[in-house]
Image (cartoon, rainbow, N blue to C red; front, top):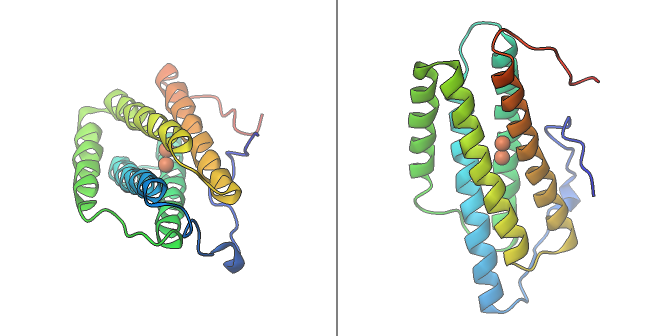
Amino acid sequence: MTYDITIIRPEMKADAVRPRGRDLDETKRKALKKGLRALHSLEIMATKIYKCQITSEPSELNTALTAAMCNEMTHMQDFQTKLYEYGFKPDKFRVRYWAAGYVFGLGSRMLGRERMLKTGIWVETKAVHHYGELLNGAEWDAETRVFIEKDWADEYGHIARWKEFLEHPGGMVDTRSA
Ligand SMILES: [Fe+2]
Ligand SMILES: [Fe+2]
């Protein structure tokens, strides 16, 4: 299945929210909980990293970072909603990920453009790996699988975007509408 990664906040209707996975056995539910919590925390970190990397200067990179931040907020909301649909709560220690995002975001911004982009690639690569584990490691209903796959595709899109910026240090050709 292919996903449109130019949509950074897909439409969601109220009746898309429903109880899920309540009749699964304990082992399966445990795997779901672990995966959803990990991704929710990671998305909190990604949102915070991009938020801290944005400066007030109008630039191509700042616009791209703002779009990525918006997309990560969507991912965070997706996983938070899924956690509650399945009857779970977010990780109690998720504030650590928020703090780590702050440190990585601000720290990389101070070290310059290249370090900033490489930090983005590093965290997205981590996310892509977790998404793979999450998809294969638990039993998802078809609707949730689509959510996860779309968010996964978005992360690949972010990696590609930061690589493009790295390859064009002096500004780049906008290929988004091509
Ligand atoms: Fe994300
Ligand atoms: Fe991402």
